[in-house]
Image 1 (tube, helix red, strand yellow):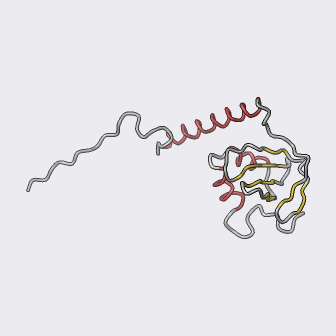
Image 2 (cartoon, one colour; image 1 turned 180 degrees about the vertical axis):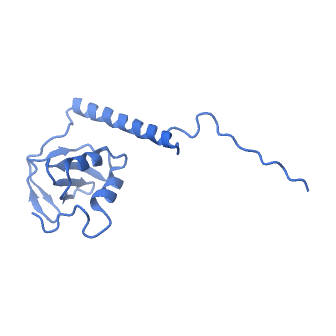
Image 3 (cartoon, helix red, strand yellow; image 1 turned 30 degrees about the horizontal axis):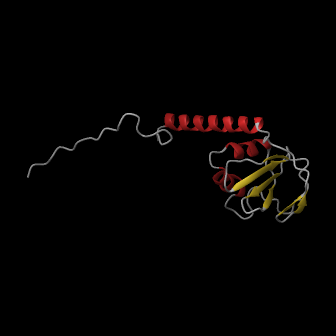
Length: 146
């Protein structure tokens, strides 16, 4: 029986679709496009009056009680369905609001890590990997700190 020659399938022009390129250059382009979208959203929110704001009402934070957020800068529109609010004090404390209405405080979070969280393509994944962590207590838990 004669063996058929294997035919190499050539990708269609423009394939893989934008955002699905596995090459390093394609990943850079995807990251650049994501950053561009985030900057556009930030500009629109600023013009619309939804820019980061301070909060004057204390709120109840899990394991902390009432926390006054007047010294915090809060971002209410995170683009995430899991984390709905990000507040940072400019020092080392971060308060996150979750979709179920609860709030949790994290310590030893500098401004650059808070900004990385807000600019991450997947805020929930970034939170799980870099802020909450997999160990108990996590790398940024405020255990024993007030």
